Image 1 (spheres, one colour):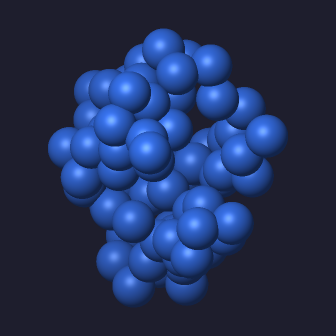
Image 2: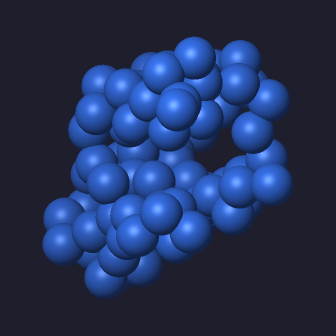
Length: 85
């Protein structure tokens, strides 16, 4: 199964959009809850170069820190959903 990691913040609607897609596709993932303060998101910044969430890591496919919920949802659909080859 996929080795996915998601950096997210509780109550974040953009994160919820990604979680909903992961659940819809039946994908297992490791969740990393981040601090609400951007200044305390060192781990997110180390992974993605910025402090916003959500951020997806998919090491099996060379994704080391994808940001932007719409991009993540499209990637998941293309890679693991009906768009998968």
